[in-house]
Length: 490
Image (tube, rainbow, N blue to C red):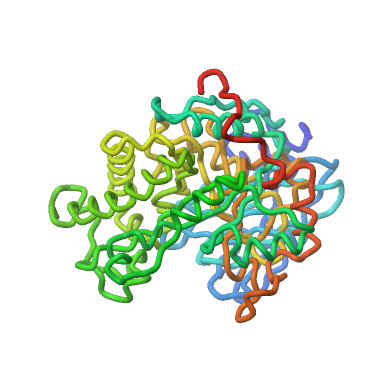
């Protein structure tokens, strides 16, 4: 490997490899270069075209792809480093290894930069690495394969101290349990708007032999004033308390419906910016729209009242507000990271200090480092991954990426998923997410036939494997979280 590394560096210096050897390797870093490949010499599909320098472009239509065959000298973990630029700025596309999705290739700007998919497990021999169009519009110049660095097990050493120093004992107990399990097991979860006995939970239990998810995911969206004004029947608070009393764990998100004043489309989808085009979060948070700030504060007041009921019932909450902000498909992310972070910290301060809500374990789910509000506001870093149908890979690259967002060791969780991950692959790759929480609807149930399990994303055999694995915690395997010992520092 050392010889190959020196050869690649020498070729780069001679100008024979114009791009592609990552800076780490060029500067004599610890990772060995296994090989460097020009995508223009690979197999091109659709509108993808090779340029004279060996780069490729044309990822514009569904089906556009470029596949490169690489040679791996010995079985192990490897980093796939793509030299790529986004044509027109930020772009995302899919990476596949031998037909299995290995990760998402992110081109962050229109300048050529290295983007890595880390810790891909490859056996000795030839392998096909393919990039397929998702967002499209990239120029891919080179692929460099590096031997992965040894996995750092210390990332699982997280402090049991919650960011809220006045956290309730039950919140401390739950977080102590999560800390004890982190790196050893993965806790199961399922979103189900109709609670413990909803169709999603019932179908999961029936399909896997009677085991229920340890975590129930619920949504507070209709407690927004817009939902209240439209007289939506809401039982989320009662469902959360009931699941806790059954011995389960509760996680809450909030599809925050915009105030009626700003809605330009359908009210029940007013968490999306195209349905509330009049809402300018930057103007609100900068003090240019005082009425808007008051309306948002009123919504927070509504949510606080529900959380207080849960706190009075002793329920600790894995609280995941303002999720997926960097995607800009929700209004709280549409104005950029600075406005979002101001809203996030205002929400934290209002709920924690003004309302005395201390049963919340704060799960940040911004999905980009630029949107991170700071370690003092975050207990757990969440990532939502929808990998596609029957893609059971561990998502180790996403796990490592999210671990790196915080300034100190924070627990990392798969806060939403479509397809299940194979627990055996998670252990092999060390992608030991604290918990997963599968989204509802089509990811569990057949469309139009709500009482039957859907295998569109996760086949029944894999579901059974996940829920019956010794590596996965189900509701019946949880300890008594009302008496669980609080860890030192918790």
